[in-house]
Length: 243
Ligand SMILES: C[S@@+](CC[C@H](N)C(=O)[O-])C[C@H]1O[C@@H](n2cnc3c(N)ncnc32)[C@H](O)[C@@H]1O
Image 1 (cartoon, rainbow, N blue to C red):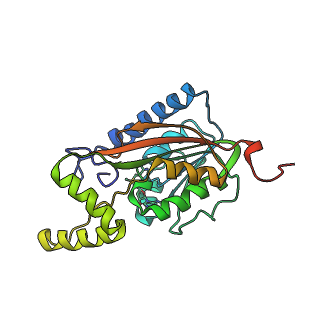
Image 2: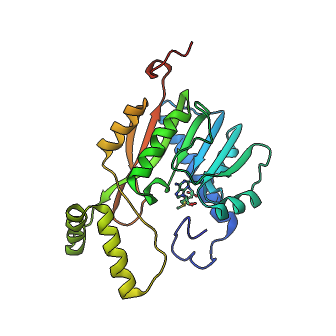
């Protein structure tokens, strides 16, 4: 649970399971409120992309008719299945592919993703964004979180930003991995990536979505500037005749 939500004091099996799932309930309540303030009231079928052990899928299952949680990690999905309180309406699937071809076009009324796209190299996140749009029903809503950049002003932050720009993100990561393992020895770490909101908007619009609103959040933690993106797929925005 700490690998999913790094709340201080919860490392080393210190999360209480019911408090952990309660955070999901609170989060989904806030997101539904955010959407309601924008005149959007999703219902029907929902996809939770990067579902982990189902913190958000379970909360969605309290509101939606059908929920699908998808994750790249079989261990996460296995645990999610064990903790599934809605076996009739909530299902979990593993998908390690860089696309969502396991789902047909227009499969979901609502697609949600939080603290997931930020952990993969942007080229993968962009591929999934286009897939979200393909999998969204006309009239459906897509809501996801993605950071932009780190806002630190210290000397180390400025040098890191320069190094990223100068070396390119991939080379920067490689060098930083080598440096960290020389200093600390090998240890797992969480990768973080940010993407410029204009680029995100272009990708979504090219895929056929309408970006309804973009607003900030603090979900990426640290000095990261992070945003919610709410999008819709209007029938008349689609490139083909729906009959
Ligand atoms: C920080 S956890 C967040 C889990 C969940 N969204 C939540 O907020 O409780 C990120 C999750 O994304 C999953 N993930 C990473 N890359 C993925 C990918 N390409 N496709 C699906 N899931 C992915 C990880 O396995 C992990 O379970």
